[in-house]
Amino acid sequence: MITICRFEIIKSNNIISAMDINYRKTRFLKVAATIEQCPKSDLPEIVLSGRSNVGKSSLMNDIADNKKLARTSANPGKTREVVYFETDGKILFADLPGYGYAKASKEVKERFSKLCDDYFRSGRKISLVLNLLDIRHDPSEHDRSMIEFLNNSGIPYFVVFTKCDKLSRMQVGNRLREMARVLDFAEDACVFAISSEKKAGITELTDAITDFVL
Image (cartoon, rainbow, N blue to C red; front, side, top):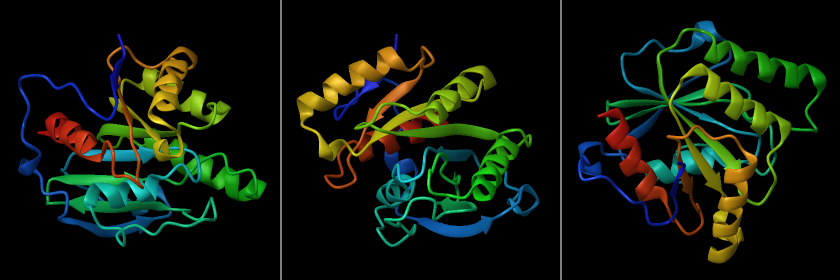
């Protein structure tokens, strides 16, 4: 059964306080354009994946409660490298280039795709993937392929629906049920609905990340 973690997340009795990780102590670490440039680390690595303009940079800023941490842009496809952040000396976040930007050149799209493919197949010890989807839109072929890949890879993942402030609460609930039917989530996948504008669902997400990695 899919766990739908809406604005109020249902937690187990064995929860580690989010104070165990200070997400405000998140700093930019580096960017990497190739696998060889990616940093080596023993920290739990959490990867942010999703299509261009889905809100990965905004989510990173919300997690850190620092709107100046990750650069956001109105122009999709702006991020062309893996961007790394370190949180409280306890987590390494890796923000992958967005996929599926129609206006990018064929050469750029192929380079983005290769970097992402190489990343997941590089043997890096990825602890968790935050796979972002825009709740307003039906999943693209890239979105479906990513979920399928994660299901087959055995890499744990959370599904994070963004842009929820653009819909009413009832519409969000309806879309979540629709997405659960359309996308083949893993049975134990935890699903979040968040709003960067209203900061809804962010604390629930960071609590779940803390509980997962510690």
